Length: 170
Length: 118
Image 1: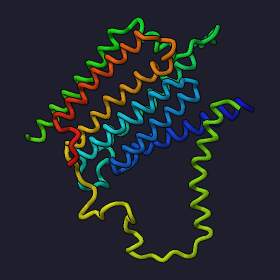
Image 2 (image 1 turned 180 degrees about the horizontal axis):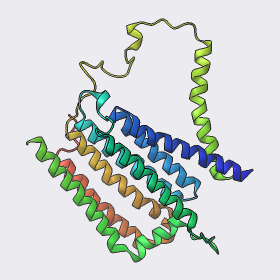
Image 3 (image 1 turned 45 degrees about the vertical axis):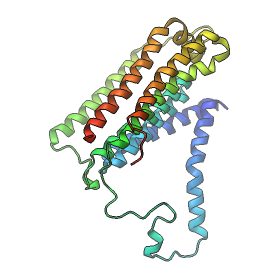
Image 4 (image 1 turned 90 degrees about the vertical axis):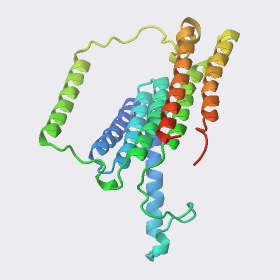
């Protein structure tokens, strides 16, 4: 019973994710595409949660559902044309559309084959809690990269502000 | 019932609840009268003038960037907060240094007027 409910949850989330991803491609208004992309990210986060990868799900929500989505929406807001209905037209040439479709199917087949042919070994012994292990590594063994990440984030903020201010012409 | 099944049931409920509320409203309401007044954004700010599909100033992008940096910081804070008791003083000082470096970014953004609303 539990297993079937779990499977149903997975199927529901997969359907939501795939439907939203299809919407990203098919929507003719790029703002709608952007918001459907957010829904896709959240669906993937839900899939992570069903796979018992809680921290990864959280990161997915925060980074993809939050930060990347905000960047995408802002980029659309800054650049979009006034004709909202034609901002995300289908590919201009028939060849690129077919190539994209065939490439996507080939990638799905290759990934599916890789999943099916891999001999998955069930884990043995108690599994260390991912978040605790991460905290121990991040603040113990890898202190310098951790602080370097802070410097990197600082540089990204400062650099982005300088670039954006330059565009403003002041 | 596993946690994962709970997620699925919760998701279904969140989808079903608004649909149910709308369906009940559709069932019980009197026939709606169409008028231009009813299509205005009631109590949702100032009415828009001209087309609302427009470009925005680049300044708003600065908020997004500052938000981005602190959003990523949250990810680093989370494992630390979960294991706060076990990690001890050294980790606390490390995290203070981390936050201080990022606070410099906020200070710079503030100084450059990135937090100004146009």
